[in-house]
Image (tube, rainbow, N blue to C red; front, side):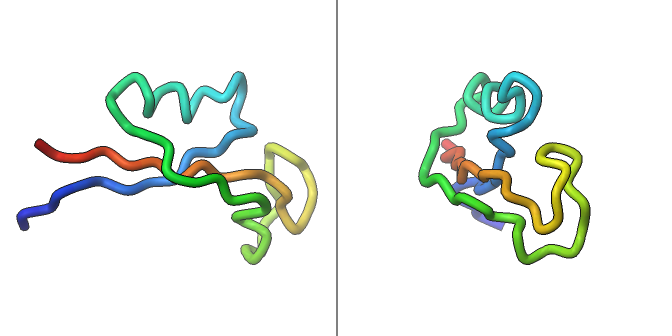
Length: 65
């Protein structure tokens, strides 16, 4: 498929910011921060416990060598 990179979003409000720390450990880099990223989804967030979700996403990228 000749992919050059993997792009994903981590949840900054995860316990002890574990999702971003995990991705950084494996070589991902931060690209951008998106406040209220999941606000348009119809679900009750387990992190902020409100609807719509007010949590923040960190856009992360890993460049494939």
